[in-house]
Length: 308
Picture 1 (spheres, rainbow, N blue to C red):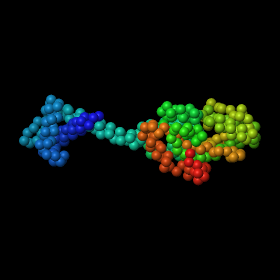
Picture 2 (picture 1 turned 90 degrees about the vertical axis):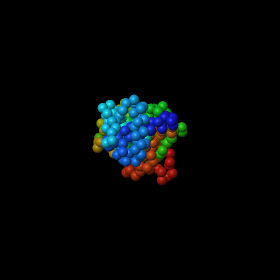
Picture 3 (picture 1 turned 135 degrees about the vertical axis):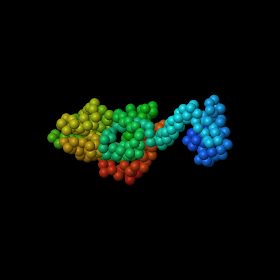
């Protein structure tokens, strides 16, 4: 909107508010006292509005001013319109602060426990009216969705974060082996290693191969982590999972540290710097201030110099 148009709009709104004040106080003198303007200025303002509309809004007399029939109908609509305008201004301000809107977040690993759950709960408390959407998938798929602006941000391992996107290191956690309590204590690789469809199965294969198992022994299940752990509980195979998964699973599954040295899962938030979504800016601000590494399930690496 050009500056002249902005000034005209502000003038028109001032004239409408002035007319409402005259209606409320049944006179120009009393309305001008409330508004803190000269009565003649208020009178000219309303006259200009009447000239623009081509209708008399008030019956003027020595005792004050009362709305005409047409004026009353017009001012009732004006009152409603200004209320809507005020609400729109409030909503616009909330949207600009990221308090309303939508945040689309992608994730490879489960977000039902540990620091990821802590993060989502904290964000929900700070932006209750923001619509939060989650999408699971492989890191490659999710990064492509961020580049295409289909997702606002993703939570992935630092290894999968491309150099062209902004990133923020969040937390690190070790890998665990999940086994059924009822199955024999087989070494890793002696039984199938199961992983969910959205897992980074290539990384799971490397972890198995580094411990003497066969890559072909890693079997992708077209299900969720909960489904995979149900199969583990039934004795179908093992699973390699981040430590936070152990917080939200059934008693019939046992978890133990993965043998040998292994780079932990280093969770990182990744997003486009030029993606203008206030809800995303609020989310990133929360990430920078929330002490996720204080969680009991996290094994932070920042003390060792990791920054992502």
